[in-house]
Image (tube, rainbow, N blue to C red):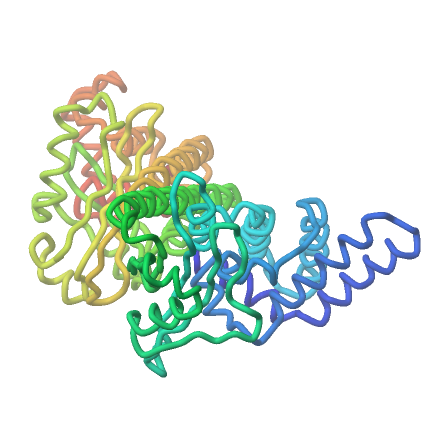
Length: 502
């Protein structure tokens, strides 16, 4: 999703002047009509103008950190706005971009996602301070439950190799670091001594400074010698609780990212008008909304135990479509499909699986042809009638090793279900019009046999469904394969689907 965010930012920057002009027109109208919202709109407009179009932070820097606003000092971001005002500015931006960008829908999602994430961060800003280390330390130092004289946050200057005090406050919440005061030393010990010298002589004898490392900073706690053994364990434990809270927030945001990807993937699929567009949108969606660079879509026939290439995104599409492979030649995939035979009445358990090294699982010819290394195999299925239609083969580029997070696996499962339902819908739709689309001049009965083969029916099941003998069905299948110049039934079905016959 970082790529989507970055794409939206780039699109906005490419039309900076026109967007700012449109925003200014809206503001002028509100001011002329005496609207109370004019002030909020102006403040929000100025903020977005500075944030989106400033050269201080590059597209890559912001795009790699969606929650960039949270990293900025709290006092630098004080903005009175609401989601209505932000939506107003977003709609104005869409209006400008629709007039200037060809095929704007491809960018519309990215711009919308950009505004959505920024809106979330801005409206959540008042609560971000609860997860800042200085907020934590202030509450700790000013607590009446602990006898802490003062606390400080120390940072190491990486370039100059010295330590300096960034924050320093006492138990009455008094700021001990004056505006122009600079306290620095070559070591934590020397800095602690320097800070103790600023206390009264009698206090120096009874107080000690305890350094507590935390991430890339050091927390200094000043307590009496008698309280040191009691305070340190409590502070260490409190820090752990604080860190757990931050981790929970981060995890929640990570989970939201995969949910965002599922929503955007489904939105893209809705714009598919036919089977071919569906395959294009599915394969592109896996790459656009998940951390993958290439995607190849394959159909699967349980009766034939064959996989046939349908479409490739950033793969050689023609090479993918020429693939017709027995599943037995793909050991890991074959092993996973064995589970399907045991529990074929339900696909709820089906999960994507990760292959660290394709050399151990795929024929050498494909390894060399497509430069395969690490892969993910994501099932494409329908949950309504429990049909496994095929799979998406995904990687992060030629000869790339990679790992996959649990959030990505969860999203892949959702993607597979959505993709399966879409393909099944168009497959059924094409069936209703198939008699008018016979590129191979197939008879009505031959098409009926093909349909049943596409649904995974065996020769026996097809014969029973059509009230024919198995020998007659085999004759129809042989005739169809000859007409379509297919090597097997699965390849005939795949070609029929591509041609819109079924």
